Image (cartoon, rainbow, N blue to C red; front, side):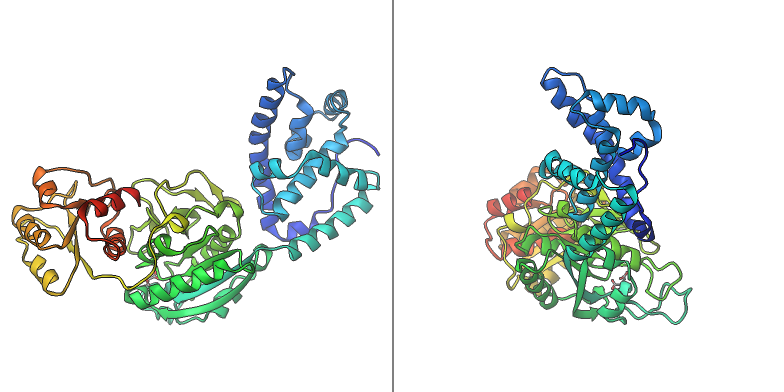
Length: 471
Ligand code: ASP
């Protein structure tokens, strides 16, 4: 077999730009990872860093930037790995990583060099054309056979919205498109996963109800418990998406990926953002790295934790952010990449179950609030009140008096903040002695969701405080 660059017929892959984009991405990550990993291994054994291993991990780099003769010489010096072999092993590495949706780190663990060399032994002896054709066929077969299975649950919202003209981004009918139409609009989904759809409801998410939340939690939980499902995506209106996400984050008992997405522009709009959001949400739901990270929200190329995410803009794409902590990762160039996780309890580590939940109201603080509305909440039967105070959860004196009275009467009062970011932490001693609970970094609307679950279990102040520290 001659040395030098081997051209593998990638036409099939080229047609599916995502494979290529992902391979490029992996190539870049592999380079960094392999250098670190292999170098540490070699140094630990008292050897010099082996150049040829680096080439194996990063074929595109090696072939573009490295002198072929030099590479051949280096490769032959160690372990008898030739230039060609290095290229082929790199190719298999990419192929495995893609076909099995493995991260680079997992691939290094799971795919022993022996296995890749066995592949090389089989294909390396053939002519380039012959081996390339066989590999292409194998790649095609494997990629279509072993795709992750994802279920899309449709609930309505702008992502399924229909307007009378392509330039209309308001005044449309939310939830007008059925789940099959949503799927049909994104044929590229077929390259990522086997996706089927179910309809939960077709509402504007401002009208979300407890009944739908409970149904959604039961349905997602049941699907994720099935061996036939690898991940679930929920298409949701953006207005209450963060509350639904956090509700599910606290109740669905599964480590498999559960991802919410939506759209800011109706499906009929020019540059509708729904199709790309849906594709990226499915990519995340189909990716093994998304497991165990709690409920995720994918919007505009970013992956957010259900705990931290907020809709922070009324119109326009890019309306979601996690103001205090930032997103968990991105879906750049088609590949989900995670940079951090949330440390707070969720899903399988949550103590809460979806059940009938007590009434909790939110009051919004403002200069001059005399606390009149506190009584309205109490009369309406609220078991808890979240007060969206100023700054670090500050409450005007008259409103504080009314809330302290409610707390003395057994109502749980949580101090949150209207600032949209940062933590609410212990402040005035009067807040402590009145028994108010700090919302920590939860937004008022998330604090309300957690307080409802918490009050379903206990009304003990210290227990409630523990819950707000742990979730
Ligand atoms: N009103 C819509 C909803 O939340 C907004 C959207 O989906 O962007 O259902």
